[in-house]
Image (cartoon, rainbow, N blue to C red; front, top):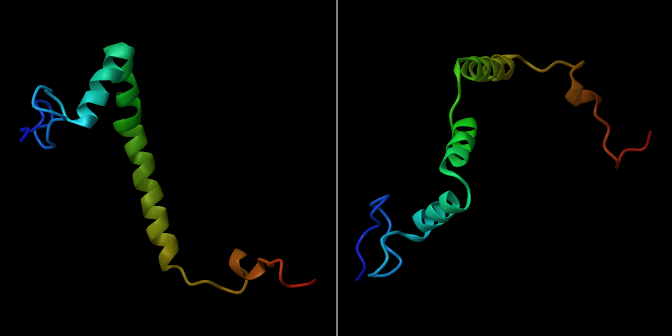
Length: 88
């Protein structure tokens, strides 16, 4: 029975003679195909946020909360939407 992956230490290795699980082996192949610097840059751009991005996300979430609490009136966009089934 294969033991756990040497990198993530969670998933079982592909085989007894392999060091990595399927996902970690794919990551290793991607690092070999592309340069490690390029992979790191992509991961930093997509998985991390700077202060400006965090502030924007926080304000967007606050707006969602505030707008959820407001009651809907007759002049809202939802009451003006006409579906295709209705004939004008």
